[in-house]
Image 1 (tube, rainbow, N blue to C red):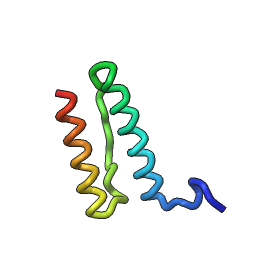
Image 2: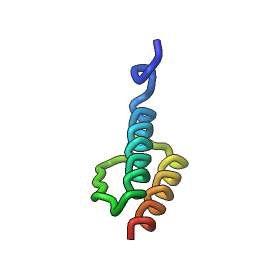
Image 3: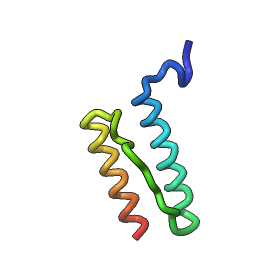
Image 4: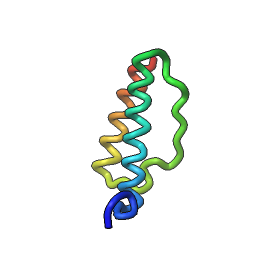
Length: 65
């Protein structure tokens, strides 16, 4: 068995967020970013992954000033 069913819910959340952020980075190349609204995105992340995610989000916010 493999694929998404083999992933924990936290890993699936992290993968989904990574894909969303990659999409935003790609969109940023062609103009301003649309609003990025999230709710409880870090709830299943451990401390290290939460810190890394916050750094990435801060960097994205700096690019979109």
